[in-house]
Image 1 (cartoon, rainbow, N blue to C red):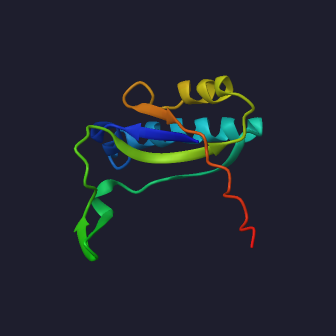
Image 2 (spheres, rainbow, N blue to C red; image 1 turned 30 degrees about the horizontal axis):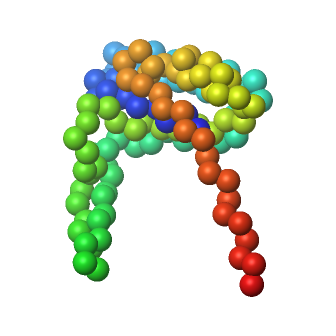
Image 3 (cartoon, rainbow, N blue to C red; image 1 turned 90 degrees about the horizontal axis):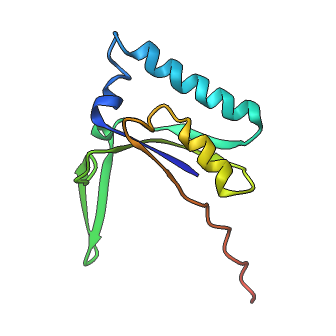
Length: 119
């Protein structure tokens, strides 16, 4: 899985009339290239963090707050699941992501499903 981390400035390009076409054009081309290669399994872009909700449960009590509860300069902007044989293949796709020069791309293997119950 590639996790695309964007800076707030980069994510702001999504809705900036002067930058939105170039921003979305870069992502459309990038995702299209992955899909055409046959490596894409699935993926989604994510809405900005100001529309997110965070929940924590402490001592059985829910604490719900608007927005993310992070202290970071990068925001998870989306993800894609790839089917590649080796880390090098994921690294190649990650290095081509439009956000890699202004943010980062985390590569994380997906866990296999847990074993079926034996009883």
